[in-house]
Length: 371
Ligand code: SAH
Image 1 (cartoon, helix red, strand yellow):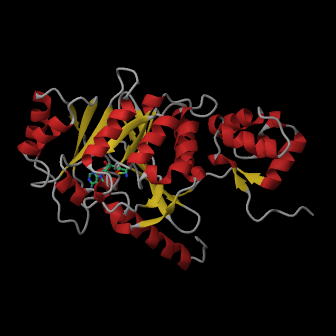
Image 2 (spheres, rainbow, N blue to C red; image 1 turned 180 degrees about the vertical axis):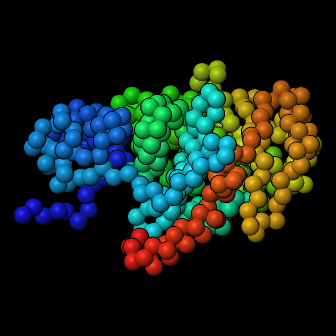
Image 3 (cartoon, helix red, strand yellow; image 1 turned 90 degrees about the horizontal axis):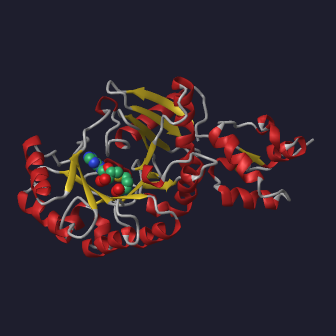
Protein backbone atom coordinates (compact mmCIF):
# COMPACT_ATOMS: atom_id res chain seq x y z
CA UNK A 1 0.00 0.00 0.00
CA UNK A 2 1.22 3.50 -0.81
CA UNK A 3 1.89 5.66 2.19
CA UNK A 4 0.59 9.21 1.78
CA UNK A 5 3.02 11.86 3.01
CA UNK A 6 1.48 13.87 5.86
CA UNK A 7 1.51 17.14 3.93
CA UNK A 8 1.17 17.18 0.19
CA UNK A 9 2.65 20.14 -1.59
CA UNK A 10 -0.12 22.41 -2.91
CA UNK A 11 1.05 23.32 -6.41
CA UNK A 12 -1.63 26.02 -6.76
CA UNK A 13 0.72 28.63 -5.25
CA UNK A 14 3.91 27.95 -7.20
CA UNK A 15 4.94 30.31 -9.99
CA UNK A 16 7.01 29.15 -12.94
CA UNK A 17 10.31 29.25 -11.04
CA UNK A 18 8.77 27.43 -8.09
CA UNK A 19 7.29 24.73 -10.30
CA UNK A 20 10.53 24.30 -12.20
CA UNK A 21 12.38 23.75 -8.93
CA UNK A 22 9.69 21.30 -7.87
CA UNK A 23 9.95 19.29 -11.10
CA UNK A 24 13.76 19.32 -11.14
CA UNK A 25 13.56 17.87 -7.63
CA UNK A 26 11.42 15.06 -8.97
CA UNK A 27 13.98 14.44 -11.71
CA UNK A 28 11.69 15.90 -14.37
CA UNK A 29 12.29 18.46 -17.09
CA UNK A 30 11.69 22.18 -16.59
CA UNK A 31 9.05 22.46 -19.31
CA UNK A 32 6.65 20.51 -17.09
CA UNK A 33 6.21 23.75 -15.12
CA UNK A 34 4.48 25.48 -18.01
CA UNK A 35 2.29 22.50 -18.72
CA UNK A 36 1.18 22.39 -15.13
CA UNK A 37 0.52 26.14 -14.99
CA UNK A 38 -1.74 25.85 -18.01
CA UNK A 39 -3.64 22.91 -16.57
CA UNK A 40 -4.20 24.56 -13.23
CA UNK A 41 -4.70 28.23 -14.04
CA UNK A 42 -6.03 28.20 -17.60
CA UNK A 43 -7.96 24.92 -17.81
CA UNK A 44 -8.90 24.95 -14.13
CA UNK A 45 -7.99 21.29 -13.74
CA UNK A 46 -7.29 20.06 -10.20
CA UNK A 47 -6.83 16.32 -10.76
CA UNK A 48 -3.43 15.18 -12.00
CA UNK A 49 -5.16 12.22 -13.65
CA UNK A 50 -6.81 14.62 -16.12
CA UNK A 51 -3.52 16.26 -17.13
CA UNK A 52 -3.15 14.10 -20.17
CA UNK A 53 0.14 15.41 -21.56
CA UNK A 54 2.04 14.54 -18.38
CA UNK A 55 2.41 10.77 -18.82
CA UNK A 56 0.95 8.08 -16.60
CA UNK A 57 3.96 7.55 -14.33
CA UNK A 58 4.38 11.24 -13.62
CA UNK A 59 0.68 11.70 -12.92
CA UNK A 60 0.79 8.87 -10.39
CA UNK A 61 3.92 10.31 -8.77
CA UNK A 62 2.34 13.77 -8.56
CA UNK A 63 -0.78 12.41 -6.92
CA UNK A 64 1.44 10.88 -4.25
CA UNK A 65 3.48 13.94 -3.34
CA UNK A 66 1.34 16.90 -4.34
CA UNK A 67 -2.12 18.32 -4.70
CA UNK A 68 -3.85 21.26 -6.36
CA UNK A 69 -6.26 22.63 -3.81
CA UNK A 70 -8.28 25.85 -4.02
CA UNK A 71 -9.71 27.58 -0.94
CA UNK A 72 -13.05 26.34 0.40
CA UNK A 73 -16.06 28.59 -0.12
CA UNK A 74 -18.46 28.79 2.81
CA UNK A 75 -20.65 31.64 1.64
CA UNK A 76 -21.44 33.48 -1.59
CA UNK A 77 -23.28 36.77 -1.71
CA UNK A 78 -24.64 38.86 -4.57
CA UNK A 79 -25.22 42.57 -4.21
CA UNK A 80 -28.01 44.43 -5.96
CA UNK A 81 -25.34 46.38 -7.89
CA UNK A 82 -23.69 43.22 -9.22
CA UNK A 83 -20.85 43.13 -6.69
CA UNK A 84 -20.19 39.62 -5.41
CA UNK A 85 -18.47 38.30 -2.39
CA UNK A 86 -17.01 34.93 -1.42
CA UNK A 87 -16.25 34.00 2.17
CA UNK A 88 -13.42 31.48 2.26
CA UNK A 89 -12.62 29.11 5.07
CA UNK A 90 -8.87 28.58 5.41
CA UNK A 91 -6.93 25.77 7.06
CA UNK A 92 -6.59 26.44 10.76
CA UNK A 93 -9.97 28.11 11.07
CA UNK A 94 -9.33 31.59 9.67
CA UNK A 95 -11.69 33.19 7.17
CA UNK A 96 -11.11 35.81 4.48
CA UNK A 97 -13.14 37.45 1.77
CA UNK A 98 -12.76 38.05 -1.91
CA UNK A 99 -14.88 40.64 -3.70
CA UNK A 100 -15.65 40.91 -7.43
CA UNK A 101 -16.72 44.31 -8.75
CA UNK A 102 -18.12 44.33 -12.30
CA UNK A 103 -18.03 47.58 -14.27
CA UNK A 104 -18.90 48.31 -17.87
CA UNK A 105 -15.33 48.13 -19.15
CA UNK A 106 -13.75 45.76 -16.63
CA UNK A 107 -14.23 43.25 -13.85
CA UNK A 108 -12.06 43.80 -10.79
CA UNK A 109 -11.25 41.19 -8.19
CA UNK A 110 -10.25 42.45 -4.76
CA UNK A 111 -7.99 39.89 -3.14
CA UNK A 112 -6.94 39.38 0.50
CA UNK A 113 -3.32 38.67 1.45
CA UNK A 114 -3.39 38.16 5.23
CA UNK A 115 -5.85 36.80 7.76
CA UNK A 116 -6.39 40.03 9.67
CA UNK A 117 -3.77 42.78 9.67
CA UNK A 118 -1.03 44.01 12.00
CA UNK A 119 -1.06 47.65 10.93
CA UNK A 120 -3.77 49.05 13.18
CA UNK A 121 -5.02 51.87 10.94
CA UNK A 122 -7.56 53.71 13.07
CA UNK A 123 -10.38 53.84 10.49
CA UNK A 124 -10.14 50.22 9.28
CA UNK A 125 -12.25 47.41 10.68
CA UNK A 126 -9.66 44.76 9.79
CA UNK A 127 -7.33 46.41 12.31
CA UNK A 128 -9.63 45.50 15.16
CA UNK A 129 -8.97 41.86 14.51
CA UNK A 130 -5.17 42.02 14.62
CA UNK A 131 -3.06 39.66 12.54
CA UNK A 132 -3.89 35.95 12.70
CA UNK A 133 -1.46 34.78 10.05
CA UNK A 134 -0.06 35.33 6.60
CA UNK A 135 -1.98 33.66 3.82
CA UNK A 136 -0.08 31.14 1.71
CA UNK A 137 0.53 31.79 -1.98
CA UNK A 138 -1.94 28.99 -2.76
CA UNK A 139 -4.61 30.73 -0.71
CA UNK A 140 -3.93 34.11 -2.30
CA UNK A 141 -3.86 33.02 -5.95
CA UNK A 142 -6.61 30.51 -5.09
CA UNK A 143 -8.99 33.46 -4.84
CA UNK A 144 -8.38 34.38 -8.48
CA UNK A 145 -8.48 30.73 -9.55
CA UNK A 146 -11.83 30.25 -7.88
CA UNK A 147 -13.59 33.38 -9.09
CA UNK A 148 -12.27 32.98 -12.62
CA UNK A 149 -13.57 29.42 -12.73
CA UNK A 150 -16.98 30.34 -11.36
CA UNK A 151 -17.44 33.31 -13.69
CA UNK A 152 -16.17 31.29 -16.65
CA UNK A 153 -18.76 28.60 -15.97
CA UNK A 154 -21.49 31.23 -15.72
CA UNK A 155 -20.59 33.61 -18.51
CA UNK A 156 -18.27 31.62 -20.76
CA UNK A 157 -15.79 34.49 -20.49
CA UNK A 158 -12.31 33.45 -19.30
CA UNK A 159 -11.45 37.16 -18.98
CA UNK A 160 -14.40 38.12 -16.77
CA UNK A 161 -11.78 39.05 -14.17
CA UNK A 162 -9.79 41.62 -16.14
CA UNK A 163 -8.16 43.39 -13.18
CA UNK A 164 -6.87 42.33 -9.80
CA UNK A 165 -6.28 44.58 -6.81
CA UNK A 166 -4.53 43.42 -3.65
CA UNK A 167 -6.76 45.60 -1.57
CA UNK A 168 -8.66 43.12 0.55
CA UNK A 169 -7.69 42.11 4.04
CA UNK A 170 -4.07 42.51 5.11
CA UNK A 171 -0.95 44.38 4.10
CA UNK A 172 0.44 42.58 1.04
CA UNK A 173 3.94 44.00 1.44
CA UNK A 174 4.20 42.41 4.90
CA UNK A 175 3.59 39.04 3.25
CA UNK A 176 5.99 39.62 0.38
CA UNK A 177 7.29 36.05 0.04
CA UNK A 178 3.82 34.61 -0.54
CA UNK A 179 2.49 37.56 -2.56
CA UNK A 180 5.35 37.66 -5.08
CA UNK A 181 4.71 34.28 -6.78
CA UNK A 182 1.03 35.24 -7.01
CA UNK A 183 1.82 38.48 -8.82
CA UNK A 184 4.06 36.51 -11.19
CA UNK A 185 1.28 34.02 -11.88
CA UNK A 186 -1.15 36.86 -12.57
CA UNK A 187 1.24 38.26 -15.19
CA UNK A 188 2.41 34.96 -16.66
CA UNK A 189 1.04 34.16 -20.12
CA UNK A 190 0.91 30.48 -19.15
CA UNK A 191 -1.31 31.35 -16.19
CA UNK A 192 -3.54 34.46 -16.10
CA UNK A 193 -1.69 36.69 -18.60
CA UNK A 194 -2.81 40.02 -17.14
CA UNK A 195 -0.84 43.11 -18.07
CA UNK A 196 1.05 44.78 -15.24
CA UNK A 197 -1.25 47.79 -15.43
CA UNK A 198 -4.17 45.56 -14.54
CA UNK A 199 -2.62 44.18 -11.37
CA UNK A 200 -2.50 46.66 -8.50
CA UNK A 201 -0.90 46.18 -5.13
CA UNK A 202 -2.15 48.48 -2.40
CA UNK A 203 0.14 49.31 0.51
CA UNK A 204 -0.02 51.46 3.63
CA UNK A 205 3.62 52.34 2.89
CA UNK A 206 6.14 49.64 3.78
CA UNK A 207 8.98 51.59 2.19
CA UNK A 208 11.75 48.95 1.88
CA UNK A 209 9.29 46.45 0.40
CA UNK A 210 8.16 49.04 -2.17
CA UNK A 211 11.72 49.15 -3.51
CA UNK A 212 11.85 45.37 -3.51
CA UNK A 213 8.58 45.17 -5.40
CA UNK A 214 9.89 47.61 -8.00
CA UNK A 215 12.95 45.40 -8.50
CA UNK A 216 11.13 42.05 -8.51
CA UNK A 217 7.74 42.60 -10.13
CA UNK A 218 6.70 46.17 -10.81
CA UNK A 219 2.93 45.94 -10.93
CA UNK A 220 0.77 49.03 -10.54
CA UNK A 221 1.04 50.56 -7.08
CA UNK A 222 -1.60 52.13 -4.87
CA UNK A 223 -0.55 53.90 -1.69
CA UNK A 224 -2.96 54.41 1.19
CA UNK A 225 -2.02 57.97 2.08
CA UNK A 226 -5.08 59.35 3.94
CA UNK A 227 -3.25 62.39 5.37
CA UNK A 228 -0.88 65.00 3.93
CA UNK A 229 1.29 65.43 7.04
CA UNK A 230 3.07 63.26 9.62
CA UNK A 231 1.11 64.42 12.67
CA UNK A 232 -2.21 63.25 11.26
CA UNK A 233 -0.87 60.26 9.34
CA UNK A 234 0.87 58.97 12.50
CA UNK A 235 -2.58 58.80 14.01
CA UNK A 236 -4.49 57.31 11.06
CA UNK A 237 -1.86 54.98 9.61
CA UNK A 238 0.55 54.17 12.48
CA UNK A 239 3.18 52.57 10.21
CA UNK A 240 3.87 56.22 9.31
CA UNK A 241 5.88 56.50 12.55
CA UNK A 242 8.34 54.06 11.01
CA UNK A 243 8.18 55.34 7.42
CA UNK A 244 7.10 59.00 7.50
CA UNK A 245 5.47 60.88 4.65
CA UNK A 246 8.68 62.31 3.13
CA UNK A 247 10.29 58.85 2.97
CA UNK A 248 7.10 57.38 1.55
CA UNK A 249 6.97 60.02 -1.19
CA UNK A 250 10.64 59.39 -2.04
CA UNK A 251 9.84 55.69 -2.36
CA UNK A 252 6.95 56.57 -4.68
CA UNK A 253 9.26 58.65 -6.86
CA UNK A 254 11.73 55.75 -7.01
CA UNK A 255 8.90 53.38 -7.93
CA UNK A 256 7.97 55.28 -11.08
CA UNK A 257 11.49 56.39 -11.98
CA UNK A 258 12.65 55.19 -15.37
CA UNK A 259 9.22 53.80 -16.21
CA UNK A 260 7.08 54.75 -19.12
CA UNK A 261 5.41 58.15 -19.07
CA UNK A 262 1.97 56.78 -18.45
CA UNK A 263 2.97 55.13 -15.17
CA UNK A 264 1.43 56.72 -12.14
CA UNK A 265 0.81 55.93 -8.50
CA UNK A 266 -2.72 55.81 -7.15
CA UNK A 267 -3.04 57.56 -3.81
CA UNK A 268 -5.97 56.42 -1.73
CA UNK A 269 -7.50 58.92 0.64
CA UNK A 270 -10.41 57.93 2.86
CA UNK A 271 -12.69 60.87 3.58
CA UNK A 272 -13.16 61.28 7.33
CA UNK A 273 -15.52 63.99 8.49
CA UNK A 274 -13.63 66.88 10.11
CA UNK A 275 -10.41 64.85 10.31
CA UNK A 276 -8.61 64.96 6.95
CA UNK A 277 -11.17 66.64 4.65
CA UNK A 278 -10.46 70.35 5.10
CA UNK A 279 -9.48 72.69 2.21
CA UNK A 280 -6.08 73.36 3.81
CA UNK A 281 -5.45 69.61 3.79
CA UNK A 282 -6.41 69.41 0.12
CA UNK A 283 -3.88 72.15 -0.62
CA UNK A 284 -1.23 70.38 1.46
CA UNK A 285 -1.94 67.24 -0.55
CA UNK A 286 -1.48 69.13 -3.83
CA UNK A 287 1.89 70.34 -2.62
CA UNK A 288 2.94 66.89 -1.46
CA UNK A 289 2.10 65.33 -4.83
CA UNK A 290 4.03 67.88 -6.87
CA UNK A 291 6.40 66.11 -9.22
CA UNK A 292 4.89 62.67 -8.57
CA UNK A 293 2.82 61.15 -11.39
CA UNK A 294 -0.30 60.63 -9.33
CA UNK A 295 -3.98 59.81 -9.41
CA UNK A 296 -5.97 60.36 -6.26
CA UNK A 297 -8.85 58.10 -5.23
CA UNK A 298 -11.09 59.73 -2.65
CA UNK A 299 -12.82 56.90 -0.78
CA UNK A 300 -16.00 57.64 1.16
CA UNK A 301 -15.39 56.25 4.65
CA UNK A 302 -17.39 53.09 5.37
CA UNK A 303 -18.47 53.10 8.97
CA UNK A 304 -18.45 49.90 11.03
CA UNK A 305 -19.73 49.13 14.52
CA UNK A 306 -17.65 50.80 17.21
CA UNK A 307 -15.97 53.45 15.06
CA UNK A 308 -16.09 57.11 16.09
CA UNK A 309 -15.36 58.33 12.54
CA UNK A 310 -18.02 59.52 10.13
CA UNK A 311 -17.85 59.89 6.39
CA UNK A 312 -17.37 63.43 5.09
CA UNK A 313 -20.56 64.91 3.62
CA UNK A 314 -20.77 64.70 -0.19
CA UNK A 315 -20.36 68.47 -0.61
CA UNK A 316 -17.15 68.42 1.46
CA UNK A 317 -15.80 65.57 -0.66
CA UNK A 318 -16.80 67.56 -3.77
CA UNK A 319 -14.99 70.66 -2.52
CA UNK A 320 -11.87 68.62 -1.68
CA UNK A 321 -11.91 67.08 -5.14
CA UNK A 322 -12.39 70.53 -6.77
CA UNK A 323 -9.27 71.87 -5.07
CA UNK A 324 -7.23 68.93 -6.32
CA UNK A 325 -8.67 69.28 -9.84
CA UNK A 326 -8.07 73.01 -9.83
CA UNK A 327 -4.36 72.30 -9.27
CA UNK A 328 -4.22 69.67 -11.99
CA UNK A 329 -4.27 66.59 -9.77
CA UNK A 330 -6.28 63.80 -11.39
CA UNK A 331 -8.85 62.76 -8.83
CA UNK A 332 -11.86 60.49 -8.71
CA UNK A 333 -14.28 59.80 -5.89
CA UNK A 334 -14.81 56.12 -5.55
CA UNK A 335 -18.36 54.88 -5.46
CA UNK A 336 -19.23 52.59 -2.61
CA UNK A 337 -20.09 49.21 -4.05
CA UNK A 338 -21.77 46.19 -2.56
CA UNK A 339 -22.69 47.89 0.70
CA UNK A 340 -25.81 45.73 1.00
CA UNK A 341 -23.54 42.69 1.34
CA UNK A 342 -20.80 44.35 3.46
CA UNK A 343 -18.43 44.13 0.52
CA UNK A 344 -17.25 47.72 0.70
CA UNK A 345 -13.76 48.89 1.63
CA UNK A 346 -12.75 48.23 5.19
CA UNK A 347 -15.91 46.31 5.95
CA UNK A 348 -14.60 42.92 5.08
CA UNK A 349 -13.45 41.70 8.40
CA UNK A 350 -15.38 42.69 11.48
CA UNK A 351 -18.64 41.23 10.41
CA UNK A 352 -16.94 38.47 8.48
CA UNK A 353 -15.15 37.08 11.49
CA UNK A 354 -18.33 37.45 13.44
CA UNK A 355 -20.05 35.52 10.73
CA UNK A 356 -17.23 33.01 10.39
CA UNK A 357 -17.41 32.41 14.11
CA UNK A 358 -21.14 31.94 13.81
CA UNK A 359 -20.64 29.59 10.88
CA UNK A 360 -18.08 27.69 12.89
CA UNK A 361 -20.50 27.40 15.75
CA UNK A 362 -23.13 26.16 13.36
CA UNK A 363 -20.83 23.59 11.82
CA UNK A 364 -19.44 22.61 15.25
CA UNK A 365 -22.97 22.04 16.36
CA UNK A 366 -23.54 19.94 13.26
CA UNK A 367 -20.45 17.93 14.11
CA UNK A 368 -18.43 19.17 11.13
CA UNK A 369 -14.75 19.82 11.80
CA UNK A 370 -13.67 23.20 10.46
CA UNK A 371 -10.21 23.66 11.96
N1 SAH B 1 -3.05 47.26 3.66
C1 SAH B 1 -3.26 47.72 2.33
C2 SAH B 1 -4.41 47.06 1.60
C3 SAH B 1 -5.70 46.83 2.35
S1 SAH B 1 -6.73 48.21 2.70
C4 SAH B 1 -3.41 49.23 2.32
O1 SAH B 1 -3.41 49.82 3.40
O2 SAH B 1 -3.46 49.82 1.26
C5 SAH B 1 -7.46 48.67 1.19
C6 SAH B 1 -7.94 50.11 1.18
O3 SAH B 1 -9.15 50.28 1.93
C7 SAH B 1 -6.94 51.06 1.80
O4 SAH B 1 -6.78 52.21 1.06
C8 SAH B 1 -7.60 51.35 3.12
O5 SAH B 1 -7.09 52.51 3.67
C9 SAH B 1 -9.06 51.41 2.75
N2 SAH B 1 -9.97 51.32 3.91
C10 SAH B 1 -9.79 50.64 5.04
N3 SAH B 1 -10.83 50.81 5.88
C11 SAH B 1 -11.70 51.63 5.26
C12 SAH B 1 -12.98 52.15 5.62
N4 SAH B 1 -13.56 51.87 6.78
N5 SAH B 1 -13.61 52.95 4.72
C13 SAH B 1 -13.03 53.21 3.52
N6 SAH B 1 -11.83 52.74 3.14
C14 SAH B 1 -11.16 51.96 4.00
